[in-house]
Amino acid sequence: MDTLPSNAPRRRANPKPNPKPNPKPDTWRNWAGNVTARPARVVSPASVEELRAVVRQAAEDGLPVKAVGSGHSFSTAAATDGVLIRPDRLGGIRAIDPKAGTVTVEAGTQLKTLNMALAQQGLSLTNMGDIMEQTVAGATSTGTHGTGRASGAIAAQIRGLELVTADGSLLTCSATQNPEVFAAARVGLGALGVVSALTFAVEPLFLLASHEEPMTFDTVTAAFDELHAHNDHFEFYWFPHTDNCTTLRNNRTVGPHAPLGRLKTWFEDEFLANNVFQALNSVCRTIPATVPAIARITSRGLSARSYTDIPYKVFTSPRRVRMIEMEYAVPREAVLDVLRELKAMIERSDLRISFPVEVRTTPADDITLSAASGRDSAYIAVHVYRGMPYRQYFAEAERIFVAHEGRPHWGKLHTRDAAYFADAYPGFDEFTALRDRLDPDRRFANAYLRRVLGD
Image (cartoon, rainbow, N blue to C red; front, side):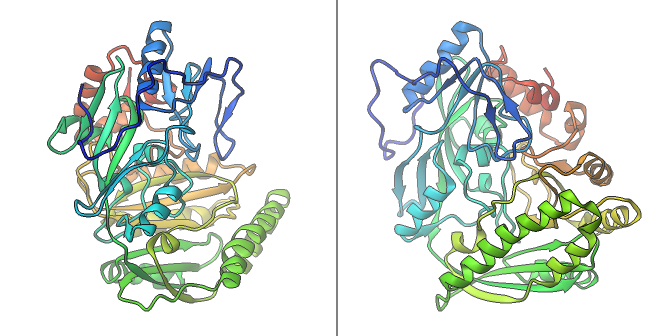
C-alpha cells in the first residue's frame, strides 16, 4: 500500500471502522437547490481507514459510491442513489512544512479553514477562487479557479494527493509517484476514486493591492490585453442590458497593509452585495420587465475603491445570493469575440438577465481534464438568480462557447457529452483508459460521469 510522505502525521487507525451510516438518509441537496439525490446510504468516515472500509463495503453490496463536498457544484457530478460520503469528519490540517513549502490537508477541509490556518503560520496559497466555502477535494476535483496572469487554478497548486480506489487500496500520487494518476486525479471528477488527502504548494504570506474601478464595456474590451498583461490578477464583470462593467485588479505589493474598515466591508460586501442585491433580484424575478432598469441602477451604483490585504481577504468574498451558473473556458485569444457575440445575443433577444457576466483568465496547465489543459484560457461565467428561467439563456450562451472550442467547468451546468470532450481534450483517451484500470466496475459512476466520460 502506498502512503503519504513520512513527514505527514497520521490519525490512528480505528481497528473497528465506524463511519456512522445514516439508516434513513434524507434527500441531499446542493447549495443552489437545483440538484437533489436520495442515496441508499449516507456515511461520514472520520479516517482514511474508515473511508477505505466504506468503499470496500459498497463493493460487497453492489452500490455505487460518490463523495460530496460542500455542495457548491451546480452540475450533478456528486449525485448518487448509492453510498453518499459526507466530508464532515474527514477534515483538518495534517502537516504544514514551511521549509518544503507545502501543506497536507484532509480532503473534507474547507478552503476557509485552510486559508486561515496558513495565514496564522505566515503562509498562503498562490491563487484561489472567489469563495472559500468548498472543501479542498470538491474544489480541485471540479477545476475551481480564480484569475491570474501567471498563476493557475487551485488544482495546479497540488503537489501530491492520496486516493482510495475502487478495491479500497490507497494510492499516493505525485509527479514522481504514480505520475500518470497524479496527472489526471488533480481534476478527477470523482471518477478515479475518493480523494482522502491533498498536499498543496504554499509560499510566504504576501500582500495584494486591490483596485476596483467601473469601466464601460468598450473601454475594458479595448484595453483587455493590456489589463491582463500588466496585472497579476485581473477580472471584470459586465452587466447585461447596460454598457457598464466593474474591473478588479489585484497586484502583489510590499505594503503597507491597508485593509478595508470593518464597517465599510460590512456595508459594501455584505449589505449591498448580498442583502440589497438579493432584494433587487427578488423584484426582478417577480417583475421581469424591471430587469434592465435595475441593472442600470446597480451597475452605476458601484464606485471605485482600493485597499491592501492578505490574499484570502482580497481574492474571496461572501456570496449568499443563490443562483444557477454556467461557465466555459475558451482560448484566451478568443475571449473578446465570445463576449461581443454574447452581448449581441442578449441585446437582440427578449432575455432578462439580472446577474453580471464574469470574465477571468488562467495560464495553461498540464492537468489532463483541467479546462486550461494545454492552453492559456479565459473563463466566461453566466448566472441566473435562483427561480428565474435560465434554459434559453444558457443554451444560447453555450452555442457561442462551443463555437469557440469552449470547455465547460465540470461543476457547472452544461450539455456536453463524451464525444465532445474526446475532441476538446487531447488527453481524454488517456483519462478514460486510466479510469478503466482503476475502476473497471464503475464503482464511482453516476449519470453525470456516464454522460461526460462514457460508460
